[in-house]
Image 1 (spheres, rainbow, N blue to C red):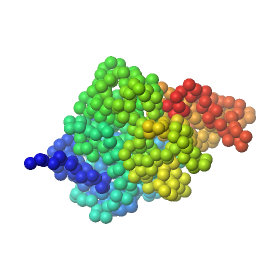
Image 2 (image 1 turned 90 degrees about the vertical axis):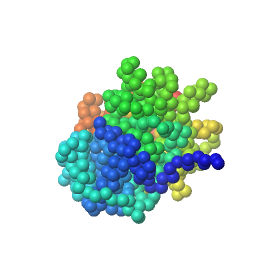
Image 3 (image 1 turned 180 degrees about the horizontal axis):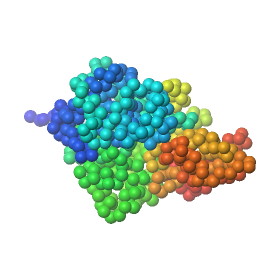
Image 4 (image 1 turned 30 degrees about the vertical axis):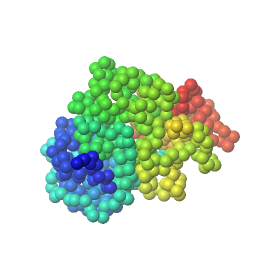
Length: 529
């Protein structure tokens, strides 16, 4: 009698399906480790169910939004699961934002309850009177010691199961992505979007028994929040780092974590940290990277340093939950096609791709340059409170206009070569030029300004401002950088400023940013890498 192969767990329908599955089938297996604390699947699901009860007791229900503002912490993941089980959504805010950026995002989300890390409370206290929708703020400490308000919130509540009305089309996450109009936009991701992404993004590099997943990317980024779902989906233990510093990463790897996703800047820091650090990272089975350009010399150095490590590059956007293309390990080491190292790989299952002339909206021939469009079940519901901006990027037949320019070759390899929108990616952070230009334009000496990204071998790109000044005024570059630092998160601020007599313009008066960028990108394989 032949035994049928184990079909594995059923495909999830809702966000917390796999968490519940592992709690039922492997209850005592390790699920999550964080700052020396470890929870089994049963224990972790119990925490989520108690949090659902606590949220319901606080009046949170279908259609509501709760917020998280903290460095990486299990509470953010627990909040996402618990709120989703009630038909509510979690807005995860970038803790690196400045105060006036925080109050804008919190108010835009209409979050009713806000979980805030101890280190971020002083920032919230400064804008508390401006948080018009927040009914309750709950403090969470990094180590969960006595007096932790979040732990008390859970302990005082009874467990609550999933609301029967919970639906795959419920919005479960709102991720704030900086907008080209100078204010961040809330990307609404549904449960079905996250589930589709989790399943498809794992194609070709599934976890094996004994693996552990190292999550160090910030949870306010899809590279953190979407990536952590993959280990949960596969039922392997997760090691969650509070921050992606070298000591935390090394500790996670030495605890047995052998799969991870990180931005290229981290890889550069490791290679520059000496033989011991390189040896520790050599224990990784898979190094997945993305969220920022990978300089080709850095990639080649990494592959030489870790010849047995599988490298996987991913390309995507918050609006599609993260990944839409991947460059797999065999393509990284394919000597017959070295040109593919500067590609973003091929589309993952369930994703369709087109290259479209942005002027005529007609598909361009294979191998020619145009705007990259994708259609996928991972596509967001839209931008929160911004139907017009949503209509600008999602077509009537469901195609997402990325604003990224590139080509697709005859073998389906996607090459991202430029940007239609003014976005700079530095160390994995999306930075939009108009947001910085808006701040610099308020300086009394600045007449006009253009912000561009220039190549950097560590961060992929860094921010440069080019300004002309009003007649009779003066402003040194350091003064303009300091002006930005008082008004923006530091990672958005220019690292350099050029003062010029006039900015180049075309006959209609539009500033020619391509002309400003050209000297810095000359000789590079693309205007992105």
